Amino acid sequence: MRQRPRRNRKNAPIRAFHRETTLGPQHFVYPLFVHEQTEKHPISSMPGCFRLGLDDLKHEVQGALSDGVNAVVLFPAIDDSLKSSTGTEAHNPDGLIPRCLRALRAEFPELVLCTDVALDPYSCDGHDGIVSEGRILNDETVAVLVKQALAQAEAGADIIAPSDMMDGRVGAIRDALDEAGHAEVSVLSYTAKYASAFYGPFRDALESAPKFGDKKTYQMDPGNVRETLREIELDEAEGADILMVKPAGPYLDVIRNMREATALPVAAYQVSGEYAMLKAAAANGWLDEPQVVLESLTAIRRAGADIIFTYYARQAARWLG
Ligand code: PBG
Image (tube, rainbow, N blue to C red; front, side, top):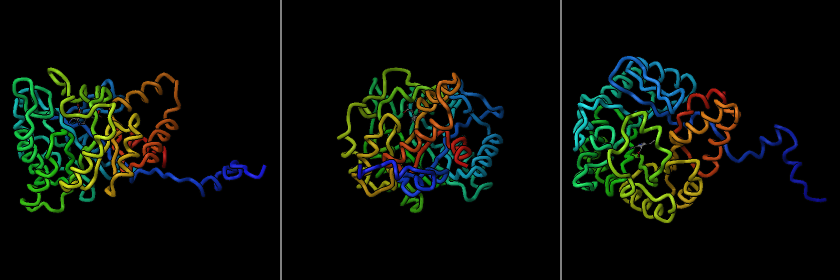
């Protein structure tokens, strides 16, 4: 035999020569849930994740930074009394998210602060946009999302990430940020966000599940990939800085497709349901958690993601340590 591929796998240093994909905490964005209460509240379908008050949030961020994770994204659990059909609390300059942003910015100047733009945490209908007669209004929603993005930029966000899937929101947010003097604030677009059942635990975490229907008139059909090319073209033209695929693990082909179709950085979101599956199997002793998690994150990088949003960010950083 002249060809023996095993020669290149002989020992660890030789394998290290040939490793094509690297994984490190510099690739991670750590999603955190916040609420108004001071006590932290566990999320039952996401073991190890909590809704945090401000003090615990700061503590968690400090821990993440010392593990080498330099970026977080915040999601708010809002009291029902503040929810409305137009989601106006989303752009309250003194709302929960702007207050958290100011506090984190003051204490951790180097932290990369990402924010979510969408109305679902603030909507009494549990939809990402404004609902009228059972339909999700696009342009009216974009006008509110723009105000939400501005409130976040004013409060110190570095990267604004619209996850709502309304048409035209990236361009509208980009223009508004520029006009308001926030040319340095980035937009990370959820370019290919699928209508996925893997978001279930996240909706438990925020109590933000849609009150009627589903999200299929704005999020993408899981059977589709060509549509991604159209969304990429639009987001590029509208000035997005980073494009995202979500979920990640079940959509590796979409990540690869996006990687080949754009020169922009690609992000992928390992969502709540992916985390819940791994946690459940690990808790049962069915899978080796550190190994399977690092393998799943490596696979997302191999598919073409530069950045990974993952609830495992801190744990993975330590396992890589
Ligand atoms: C909604 C939003 C969702 C997630 C992030 N932003 C849920 C949804 O679209 O219903 C899901 C994240 C996860 O499951 O981890 N704007």
